[in-house]
Image 1 (cartoon, rainbow, N blue to C red):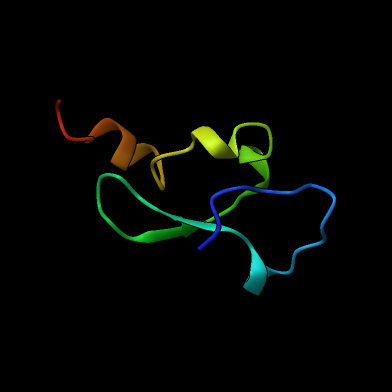
Image 2 (image 1 turned 180 degrees about the horizontal axis):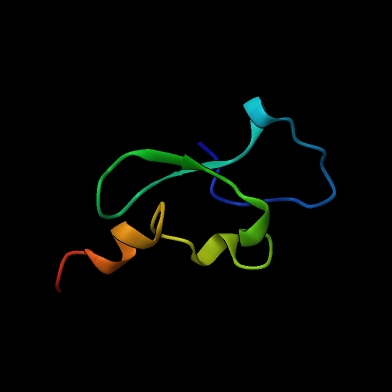
Length: 55
């Protein structure tokens, strides 16, 4: 699993970088809207971000 995105490389859907969601624990893949902040993304979607565990 890759946690960094290199814009110089071309990716296909099957080779996109993935991460594990901090809330639900499921894997999720890189999305175009996360291009600028992929290293900071922790949650697979808005629902998991709203329901994140309290510290």
